Image (tube, rainbow, N blue to C red):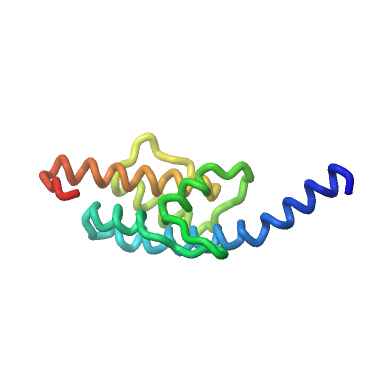
Length: 129
């Protein structure tokens, strides 16, 4: 097998994992956005630190966000997800405002939102960890 064919074989082997990763990410993002509406930052932290099955292994949801954040491919996120993340990011006054076109942009925004919510809770006197 020449080098080009080997690269294609590796890419094809990764594809099912990437599809599973993106599927898990979509579910995590949706749940995160619903929970962020009114829940305390501690429940979001607990949610992100919980596990999710992908393939034959378990990963923390935070690890899934970080994996998407580190993606090298420019995969466009669905417009509806872009809009929901933009609205929540704007309501939290996340600065600088993130660009939200790609999946990795969305992952970065979610991670930043969790940090902003944690700092807001500390500022407001909610020091539960």
